[in-house]
Image 1 (cartoon, rainbow, N blue to C red):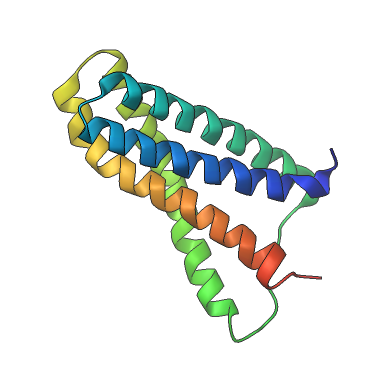
Image 2: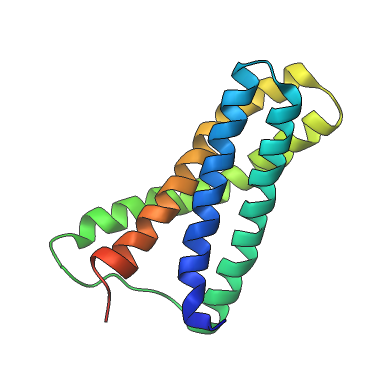
Length: 141
């Protein structure tokens, strides 16, 4: 594997996280606590591997800039801004949600999880969209 492979790997990890988050939501709505737990642990693991891979990539590759097409750049930057801010915000939310679940503080877990899940889902989906914009739809050569 080469450094240039990591953006695709990262997008796949974000995509997997999105799937696990959706399954976790579906399972808890069905009352399947074990299925929910397993899906959310899987989302946590894939998101953690993503974060490590993302940091490694940007440590070595540096910043990625969106330059063209110029008319789309403001839309891309708006998406990137919301994605980045919420990616930072969601990390402690995830850790608190997991901590409360591990301690079986279900009511407290539910109170934060109802906010954590949509933010985490947004960050995972927009991570894939950002990859598609940068590397597939408008490759920055």
